[in-house]
Amino acid sequence: MLVLSRKANETIKIGDDIELRIIEVKGDTVKIGIDAPKSVDILRGELVQSISETNTEALTIDLDVFSKLTRKE
Image (tube, rainbow, N blue to C red; front, side, top):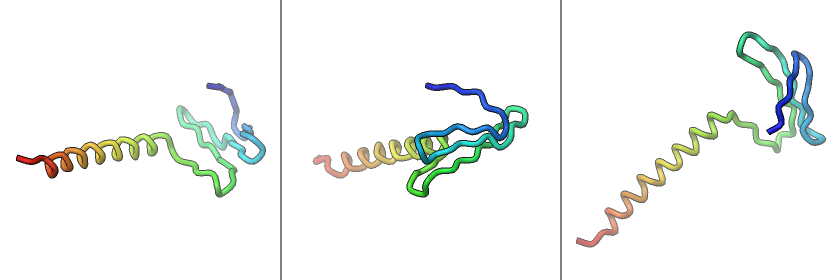
């Protein structure tokens, strides 16, 4: 992992077409602006984690139901 220190209004470039700009630093909160092509998906990490956990849970429930439905007694 690359770790960089930036101050307000400084930027970080990723490739040719993505730029991160530090908008504001207030206490332990940092506001970041992201300039990227519309084709690039930008999601919060905790949202991706939540979706992944929900999908895993749904898959587990579906497998349990499937095994009950296909069990021959």
